[in-house]
Image (cartoon, rainbow, N blue to C red; front, side):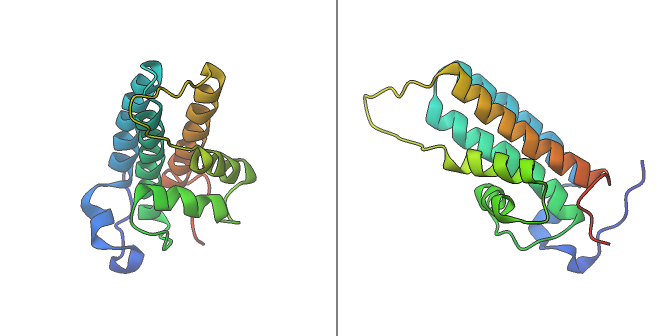
Length: 143
């Protein structure tokens, strides 16, 4: 598969350290780690991993269609939640993922119902699917 060369003005240099497809694959790897953390009831680490996975995939999309969404993975997810050019379902998924509280209280276990963890996981997958669609030309490319 041939992909267009990224023009120098398409984004910052750090974004070009991986190809768009590599960013997606990195996000999928992080998604697997986050799922494992969810199954071990490590809520804080799982949520952070889900946000990282979504943000890594969004780096792939930003490689194709640059937007100044900040530098961190979480910055990207927050910006996507506010991006009116993104589909409503994707914005809602990003908002859901951003709104999950992360509490790190020593010696306290915060229980998370499986249905909540499943919602967070599905939101992450929705964001990652959107990034994949941008990378592969289905949506979101600037004209």
